[in-house]
Amino acid sequence: MTGEVVKVRSWEEFKRLVVESKPNAIVYNIEQHGLSGTRELTALRLIMPGKEKYYVFLDFRRGDKLRETAIPVSVDKNGNRYLEEQTVKDFLKAQFERENLIICSYWTI
Image (tube, rainbow, N blue to C red):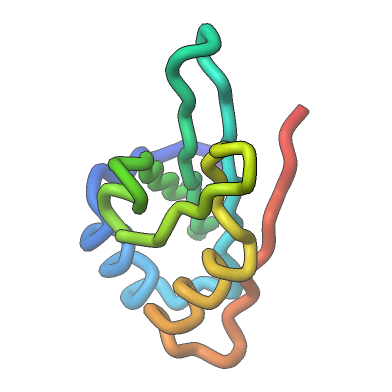
């Protein structure tokens, strides 16, 4: 694999690529950042490994859900917004309806 990264701009395009490519796995990362104490960022990064490329899709919070996928964003007792890992996994399994599709998270430092 050459490792070229292709940014996918829409959820519909990412879904189409997954259906056509039939990857063995999709990797996700839930990104939580508090920016300057007044603005927070909740995002979901999806990565599909391809034969010669990695396809990456980013989805960001808008209100109480993610903009493209409409995955709900939870709020804890302190008012902090977050994505639940199981909700992300369940959503992806429902979207792609493939028993053998591995859905796993990764962490970056």
